[in-house]
Image: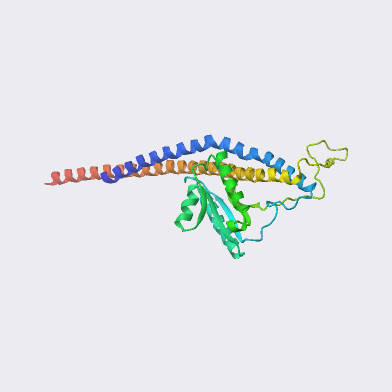
Length: 311
């Protein structure tokens, strides 16, 4: 019994050490999630302004032959960027992204397309290397805090592949598999089509709900002005469209970073609670073993005394 009691005490010490590690990782994730969430959600207004600028140029010009807007028919290769984490301890964050990426690439193959794999994050890199998949290019080391340089590098590599000549093995489309941050308790894996870009132009402008409604409670509808472009629409497209793609990639990485930190905080919080519960269970078992040991010793003493008395 003494050996069992010592074993339980060793388990208690080991679990207490793990509990401290889990708690520290939870606090680190909690300290970073606020800034990551602000960055991820703060990019949406900028993306909306860029989208409006592109839609304005497209609606008031005859420029329809820009390479980022036209579908390529000279290749069936499709680039797929998979965004995962560099480290574990984040629950099912990376596993969910990889499962959705595998499903989507199988769907592309069934449609007669050939996926070309790009991966961000060590978890995704190790996953595909273990499976023997051909990874065209990978990035790692900044999954929970992506730098502008890394975002620009990824966007430029994908843009260069999409705009390449037929002899340089181009891709016809670009898709991104990532985790969108919606709240601290909800992160959703999404597949987003990036290139070629699709500009949706509605015939009727939407009502401006930031203005005051009229007597009937209806909001005014803004009238779009007529634009003249200087320089030409093509030069504006050449400037705005690559900038828009780079910003979208940066937004995807920021969303993924916030989702990773939120998932890690939740996972480490659950792990800390489970470790505490495990310590309580081990403590109870150690107490039971100690009580059994004391009872056994008392029984042996009483039995020995009775033996001596009878002899």
